Image 1 (cartoon, rainbow, N blue to C red):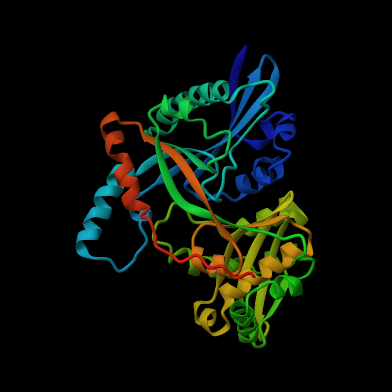
Image 2: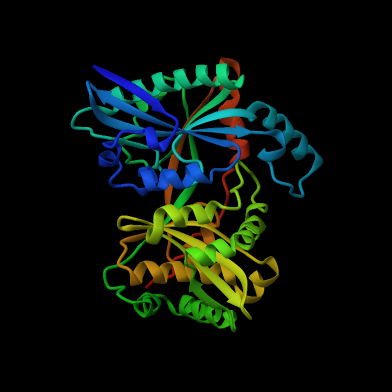
Length: 383
């Protein structure tokens, strides 16, 4: 007998959950506790377990994201016509969204299944049953209607991109910005070897960026330092976050402290100091052999002068190389500059539908408008 259970707290999920989450930190209890303790105000978490008889054979992270008109689009200088279009689209998309996956991070980090005991098709049948229960629960308890169902982010060869199961539920396929991934080559045993592998043009670029630091010191922050600087870290994060064109959430002030508290050495925060003042930071998550880049922030007045963002990308590469990771996941956005340090674009797909049959017909072009294809030049820095 295949059935599911829905949990609303990490403490309630079964111990055997960890057996299925062993290969992905984003599904493990320590990470889930980190989010649960410091989630954005508009995100609620649900944990779905799929059982075969009494054995847990599949798990899923489901997030309820509450989108509001004022939050969907950031304040940017656009034409009056585009502003009107954005307002119209916001009315279609606003409301409650159920995301199977993690809206706070690029990649498919919401699903794990023991495929020896349960097929992907059987798993999805129970996930859609769970979604139906959650929709009814949200309607009853919160008097909110779930508008959109979203499954994110799949590489083309992902076994969970199971089209028969997803298309049967009238989900649209949508291509999103690629995930930028840098495979670490075997002979890159040091940062010097990584730089030596670059063409002359990109070695010169690396050296110029390093000179631009000009007195800026980068150092890892421990738990106590993160606690003491929580407000400043959050302010620096907001400097970057508020410049994104579309907004689905804002991290709370204690987010990075919560992650360090629960994840310990698997979560890294590196700060940039100028004259002992914190002017920037970046964060990393150690996920098996993959080094996952997380959120960052910087003082806008210092960014250009010291090329903080580019130097952060180089420092992420250095950390990954020095600590024996096989790849660095730079995530989406800023594709061109990430490709200039060695990251490669890997296409990603998501699946979504509107719960209104009429609006579902219009959802794909609406999503395409909100997520336009961006022209960018992929860089090739290595010999």
